[in-house]
Length: 77
Image (cartoon, rainbow, N blue to C red; front, top):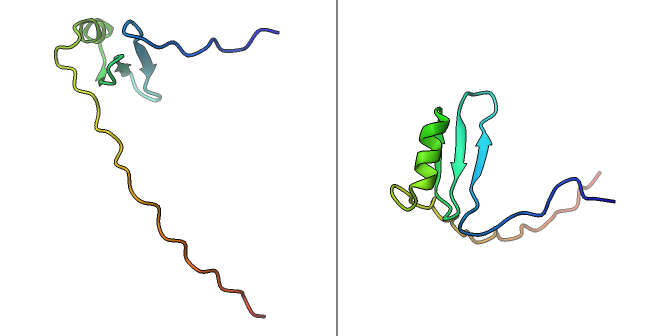
């Protein structure tokens, strides 16, 4: 049986383009992690293929410590 989706591709020649639901906009994701939102597909491809000009990877997710566990109190009826 063949899988429904091919394996995820990686590398310096892999670009991702997502349609932003409910809009006429496209989200471009470069292999370096930079993202840009566009209405015009030509501008989108110019931006993607112009790497590294104007490419700034998005902010790294901040690592926040997990909240301390709160003691659980038994409910009395």
